Image (tube, rainbow, N blue to C red; front, side):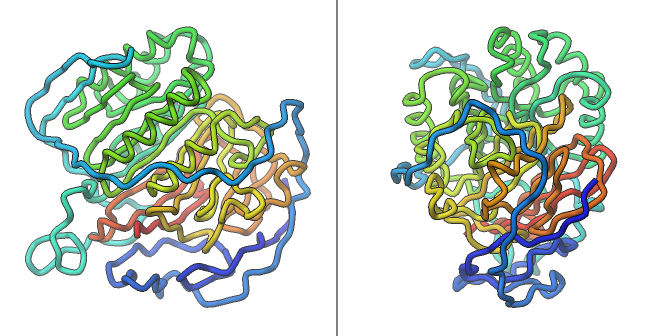
Length: 446
């Protein structure tokens, strides 16, 4: 239980109207809110230009670990522009890989299903243009857009039992179209038990994709087989490479990399793979997903297990960075210089309005899938200025404002793409299993 309020120090906003950082009700993007010259905040968000230079630090409990991370240096610029277009039409086929030691490339290309409309957490309405298209500003949607209102759930560090099943129930109640599991499935090296519990709630054909975690390595072949069998039942899903370890996938217009960096395989091989698949993809929205993370980009005391070079590649591509491993929720503001701690990783803009695109991303840890809930380490993170929202056992920061009197619960991060008829707009929120809205934010792809 806590009774403290402060606003994290925010650098000057970049091309957008600034606010105090307080959480707002989502009103949805419309195409009129965006222009080539920068943002215009929706009137319903209540955003005004204000000085956001005040700062503060947390006084929460400290859990400093002994396995300290390395001091971050400015990361090299890597990666490149996307050049090829994915194809999600045709018949189901499976072909063997000609390089690498992974599982076969699997393409299950049936017709994509229609996503659900906005639910109670997204109050914006889907726009339709006069010519019947929904691409925003009277234009047809681009070929590389996601399906309209595609809702993606991200969870990590599951375990088994009532909390884990409650998280699965949450996915159904929110009408998620797919789930990305960010590693550490059941902590029991029992793929059959993990799959059985998941199927008891989600069924055997719900679109599930997963990345290897450190607690999955001993029985990984079994978990991978379960994921492969499920992939074969997902119409329109395509994954290439070593599934869940070094793979590149697309589903309903969303591209995502499933990387075992820091868990399985060499750092150099993973860095090369991430750079290659991001350069070869031209989908509008892309995610880099990992189980492990870097100390600066999570709320606890886990060490640096990824590499700044890999994350810089994701930033250069404009891909969202999503991780697990730390059993809490933590989201940054827009980052423009990942790996440069001295420059606060280039954090800029408002906590509740994020921008992604070449050279711009944000990172998030969603590790409250059911196993346990860890605390915010104020000794390590209390002075960091790049955080937008944090939710742990002892500390809750919601879009720059500390919340009080709460009991932390497990939950899931949801990202809805192509909202309000605009393929460049997305909306994110974290909801716990009690139905509490822990974090809420908008994203624009520039």
